Length: 286
View 1: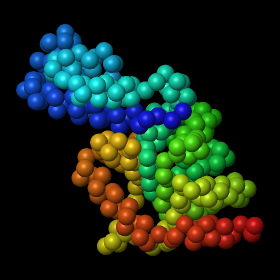
View 2: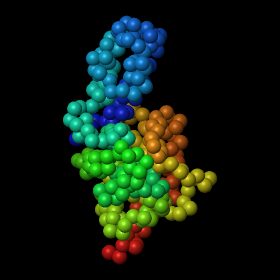
View 3: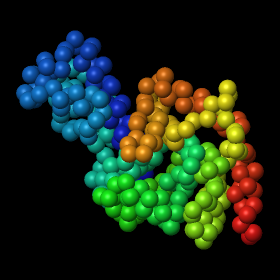
View 4: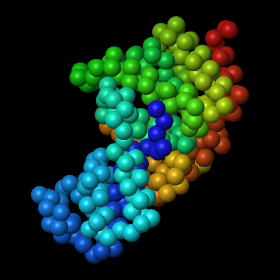
């Protein structure tokens, strides 16, 4: 089910707005919590940092303390409801591990997504068989990983590209991501055909970076990353960096700007969408 925007980003936006209002009133965390009878400042701190789903009643109490007038009050209530998300949405994400859930929340509300993957096919473009191979390899490092559940969860995430109002999606793939390596031939052939079919959608673009292709001054990012922009221009653009055991979310303007400039430079040296499809299908023999 489409969301008006990403719950993750709405939490960040709401927290920033509430922090600004508190500072405008020259109140400390301790003073606000004392007025509301909250046991410690950690609850308010997590809300301001966008680290927890806000309770609407708590947000209303904060707006009262800060004496927020309409229409700003009404706007912040809408943002708070978006940040909390609906029960139906959380039920759909129920099987997802925390890492996939974060990506799913970002993807669900994004207007534009650009992913850079130097080594593997991005999750939104993976077939179930290819996803299973990758997740099984990850389970060697994390025995608690439920591979079957994660494969199903990946399928739920991928529905964002098939919905009525999908985001504009661009995948920037390094050559290694398009090298079958140890992937069994039938799985790889299915994966390539799937990539080509998705690339035919009007809102999906797949671009291959030729070997040695790098941005200006020879810059070649070594870490996979994803850039997200949202329908509300006041919601902060966001970058997710993917590491082996965790992911890092960047939302400051300076950090995001660097990655957006790197992305533009990589797009300038990547094969065109048409050239990419030709390169992907060259060895299929179809």
